Length: 258
Image 1 (tube, rainbow, N blue to C red):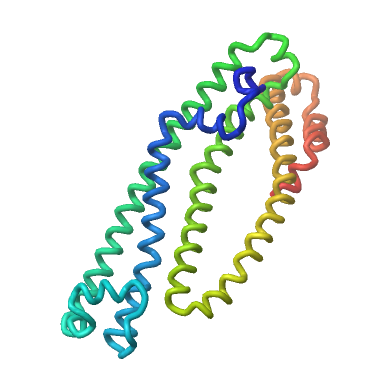
Image 2 (cartoon, one colour):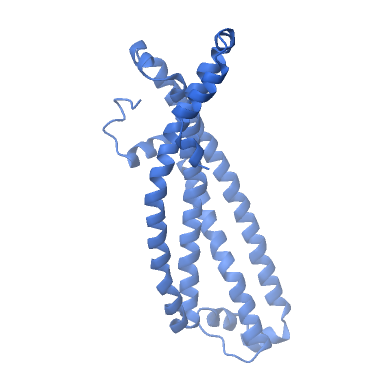
């Protein structure tokens, strides 16, 4: 079903083509997502400074020392501890605002991307010759126009955003951990490559299974389309039982995809 205009394009160029009109929204969504992760890491750090250095007697170390000195030092914060509470509230409010902007821009970008993909796919199918439609099953075509486009959208809007969020959270957490105690941070960082390696192995194995499930879902869509459009013929000849058994034998992988 690949258009000749798209055959020589890599997946990056093809994705950039479909992202036209929504790339700015996706960039804004990613930026807001990163800011939310930064605030998520900063709030515990501010509370930690308040407990260890303002309420306690530990010296302020790392990047927070300059900020504390800018507001008058630890003694000033001890006399005006409400300033820390205001700082936490401002960070929490900022995190809520940027999370809302992230959700809004992400949804708008998703709708634009879905409209562009499905519009161009449908337009391409309409221009294909009749011989192509006789070779390809109707249910499989419907699968490409609905489920496959939705899968691409879910990857960009959910999985890719989740990946960016996780990477940003890990990087920021490790940076602040090294600023606090580099020995303990080094021990924690050792496990990051192990988790990444396990995730890659899981992805390589699960990806093949999901691809088989997707192919069988196209077969299932074809069976459903054929039976729904020919329901009168099936009932007229009493072939309901045969069609049920036929659908089970033609889609054996579907049963193991849950």
